[in-house]
Image 1: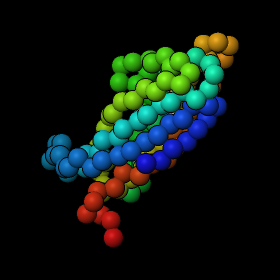
Image 2: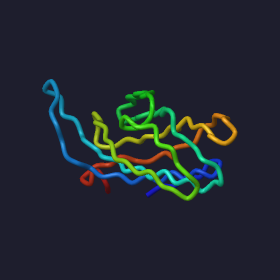
Image 3: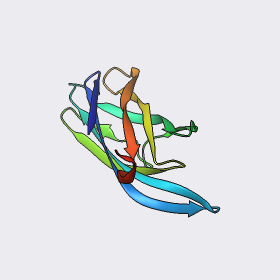
Image 4: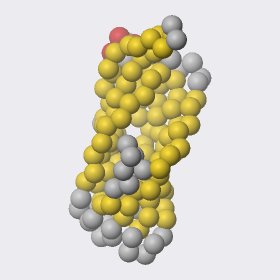
Length: 128
């Protein structure tokens, strides 16, 4: 598990290899990631959008930008945690993801970025 704290918001990420899939006769590797967003600040914050960079070992890069996470824009009171899981497909047996969440401090109305730490996506059979 990797963890990063930005402006009192703690992001923790864990991953799991889910198997292989074929799409248009191309072999893809499926991964699931589990995100925990913990508000360790004294302010109420809301997650408004996400910005992901997905990399694989074949030098393929995909950028994903969108509102909220899995259809939600969670509001986190101080001390509260929001968790969710999502996934991605890679063309190779290992890669990485990183990015940031765009949040708003509902007390001050200031917007800020919260770093999502870089994490690896590795198939068990690719580890030496």
